[in-house]
Length: 311
Ligand code: CP
Ligand code: NVA
Image (cartoon, rainbow, N blue to C red; front, side, top):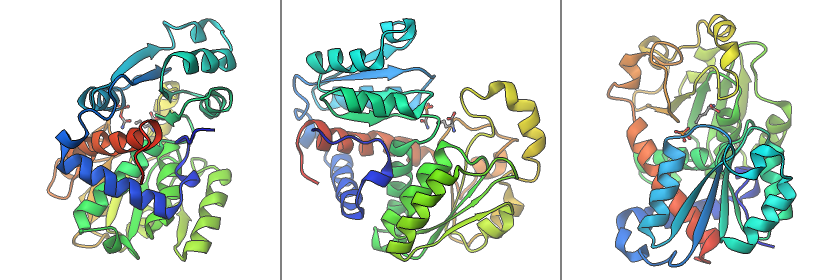
């Protein structure tokens, strides 16, 4: 059975460290990997929109001598009701890996269950592991190595969504504490909080869940936010804007973090809602380094899962 990347929870801390070493090498020595995906094809299934995920996976495959196929669910038979199990088995006969962005998390787990090739989760309603890994990789660069992350705190302020879940599950893998502040009724799912707490207990890190943004941000080395209405929740936009009052990451909130704290956002961002323009485009922001790193980290993930490169 091939390995997949469905959730950061499935990776050991050593594997995360290995992926980050490989990603750093990919970033520093791009030409070294230019033939590693020769004659390999990645199928990219998208049920939702994307800028970063689509372009970074596609460019990543091209840079390593392979190719990527954009498979919009509107165009392939999946969108007309062909079973996921059949889709997974058929694609497994043609290509070398699948990256999928879906609504239901189970669509991605089913692709892995029924197919025989590696599956990479490119975002589901529940998780966004490629982004979460990239965020900790970016913090590793900012603070000067993986050891420098140990004992630091990441604060996530906003919706208890796919990003909150993946950041919560990733923190323990790099030895960080994580604090999630969400409005009442918009907290993280207990299922993922439970997994994160278990991992944190074993790793000796903390998972703090609160409804108070100031409590979360206090003493943090990184402050993170994401949109208030995720893809598929557009009709809830108005009521969410009301519910998330007081959860905007602005300079006043940032002042509770450590002096060296950086601001991260997976993007796309809504300036004036979850983050002020001043913070999003200010000196503490690392959003474009973060976006760039998607490319390097995902190339490392593909090298590991699809080309047998050891981590
Ligand atoms: N952060 C992220 O996944 O961006 P896209 O939705 O543009 O892929
Ligand atoms: N939570 C957001 C992340 C986008 C990258 C969404 O699911 O729309």
